[in-house]
Amino acid sequence: MLKDITIGQFFPGNSIIHRLDSRFKILLDIAYVVMLFIAGNYCSLLTAGVFMLIVYMLSGISFKLIFKSLKPLLPIIIFTCILNLFFIHGEGEPLVQLGFITIYMEGITTSVFMTVRIVFLIVGMSLLTYTTSPIALTDAIERLLSPLKKLHFPVHELAMMMTIALRFIPTLIEETDKIMSAQKARGANLDTGGLIKKAKALIPVLIPLFVSAFKRANELALAMECRCYKGGEGRTRMKQLKFGMRDIIAVLIMAAMIALIVLMNIYVVIPGV
Image 1: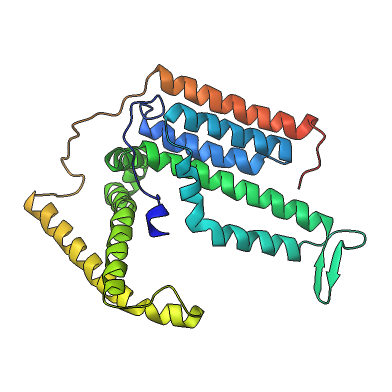
Image 2: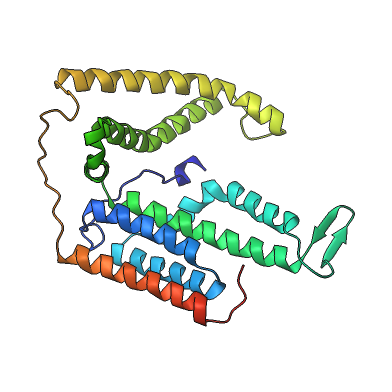
């Protein structure tokens, strides 16, 4: 399970998606999220999903990573599906009624719609870190938030903290896997028993994980101090962010897709949510 978590990982490549300006990629990812929430019926929602699959094909990222990004979040997806299924009531007679449990047709349609939307949302947000290096993300976030510097907002420090936190997710996952393997080699039973027993079995894993995390944080702080890191003051960049024609074309395509979704909501007569 831990090896399937791909959040925060970067997969180098030379595709057109990799070569897009990181600032535009963040804005386009936000626009994609807006597109998903604008989609008001199944046709427009599936169109947004097909669009993201085409983008994955252009990026050269394996479709296996899509399932890996969804697997750790499967409990949240199932929980959301169940909530909408049982708590959305509609007009008319319920399809299923067992005691206090009632299921309406509106609950089923809403549950399926919200589940598909969450899946597409996770898939779309994962592509940003798959195709953008942590350094590029830091520079992009700092550039996008640079107007806040006039209000004395610590833009550089915020961007650095966000990127370090994102970058350390794969590291902590790898460290957790090593600790669990070491505990199993010493005879620890982490996979059997009830929920309470499994929770108690995680205590020998969490304690060394916290110790290791603090140790890595201290080593990182010492390394930054040894290299005379002083935040954004007087800092220069080896690679300057420059947008090109491909970025403009990507923005136009995203704008056209959002316009298409809006038109499909208006003119395509398919029952939605």
